Length: 395
Ligand SMILES: *Cc1c(COP(=O)(O)O)cnc(C)c1O
Image 1 (tube, rainbow, N blue to C red):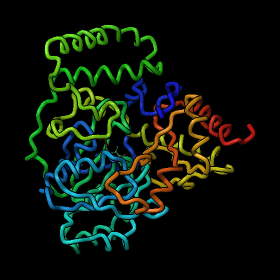
Image 2: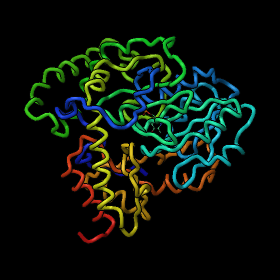
Image 3: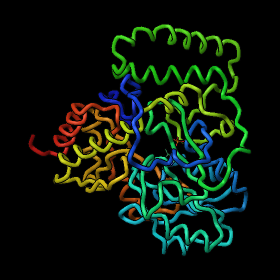
Image 4: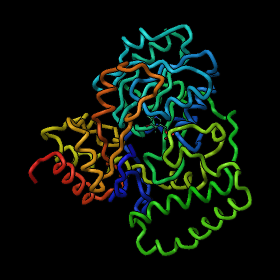
């Protein structure tokens, strides 16, 4: 059976560049993973994860504890280094099931990956103690969590390493970061990703903005770089039909990890956009959109928000909604162009079936709606109305 084809999302599922992305910097009140001192900016979160494992010299015969609720791109770095993922259960509040982790632990385990799902950070102290007691490393997966503080610690600070997926928070094509509070990363030598990649990264960010009319009249100026891009692509194809890709497939929606990209630097346009972005705006607008979604979708029949309280100091990645009948609600929304993220829809085939009931339930029922800073309040309202309609609530 071929998967159904849905129209393009009517509003952007991820941040689209706009002039407002560059509002003057204002100091953020919240701690951010990007405050962690040692940093290494690469092209994606999965590359950062592979680098963390490589730093730990994880390889063939080793095991890495990974959450049963995951995306394939979190598992690829483990297997691509020849190591084996061991899947541990998560609790219904998305925290790690420490009892299950203890049962999974073996002499071959080298590291534990813990994820702060959807931007809702968990206190890492018990996990830190567990890792210290067992002599394994803690890797904090902050792909969803740019801001946060729990148990007196900033997000990413408890881990030997932390990783971030910057494409989820900034209007950029490529971007991930390996971070460490205590270990210097200056010995990691990164290579340039190449001019063609730099051009592609810049143009993709602009094209995406243009698709959603984020650039106003300035959009007309984009014809030139777009023409250059098409020219480059045609020439490259003509000259070297089977040449190395100018960009990893992972950045075009794939789940895999391309080891060729593990030691390549982030593109300069993405680095520029990150440096020029207002962290305050990201923090404030994501929180305010989340509150609107909670207000309108907090008490519905047939669906419940995974987190009905927005803690201080965090800025959500998305609004996760647990839906009783995803088989009807999902297509109904997609047909209307409502953007939906489905983190964890596909779980690793390496994991035993029914390994974790909570993960199975989330994998099937959890739909995630964007709440990023580049949505307008009107767009968020439009989305909430479509969701209510799809759930059969009277407008
Ligand atoms: C997206 C994601 C990653 C990988 O980040 P990419 O930038 O897509 O490579 C890792 N962990 C989690 C939890 C993610 O959602």
